[in-house]
Amino acid sequence: MRILILANGSEPSSGLLGSLRKKCDRFLAADGGGDTALRLGIRPDTVIGDLDSFRSGREFDGELIRDPDQETNDLEKALAHARSLNATRVDVLGATGKRLDHTLKNLSVLQQFDPFFETLIFFDDQSLTRILPRDFSITLPPEHLVSLFPLSGKVEGIVTEGLRYPLSDEPLENGRRDGSSNETLQGPVRIRHRSGCLLFMTALTPELL
Image 1: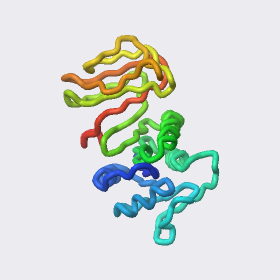
Image 2: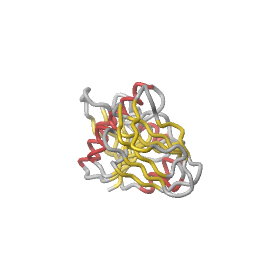
Image 3: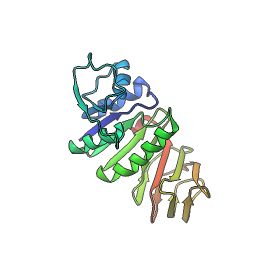
């Protein structure tokens, strides 16, 4: 099952939200993300969270799940619900933007929940963000933006193929060396790493939805 979640960060375009909704079996909104969805004209199946931000409750005729737990944020609640529905892939919109602390928290949530799904991806109108498995391949057009970030602080043994600035059994480490603003060459891209949590970001195209 493929599930779409809309969190309460930066608002996606209606086109991106609509395109992902068509590809997903269910649509969950995390608290105030429900207001965003309704404003964009796409009704969620479920709104979940502590419901301190959702203002359209009286007009909403879908499923409402109130979880008052203050130890988890609304995206965590939505991802836990997606897990209970046996989702294999989860696409998340609205996880970044607005407050920087919320964005950093949601990247931590991405790392927390990534092991529970076959695929967990953050989308916005500019980019796709995901955590990479130890060996990852993707086909992208030439001169396509790709960035790598050591989400765990340090990632070791990185080997890349098909990027303009390659890595050959090398580390990335916060505060010392990152892998931002690389770009693809002609042909497929392959990225391997030995240890750590490696974040992959690339410019969004319709083929990546």
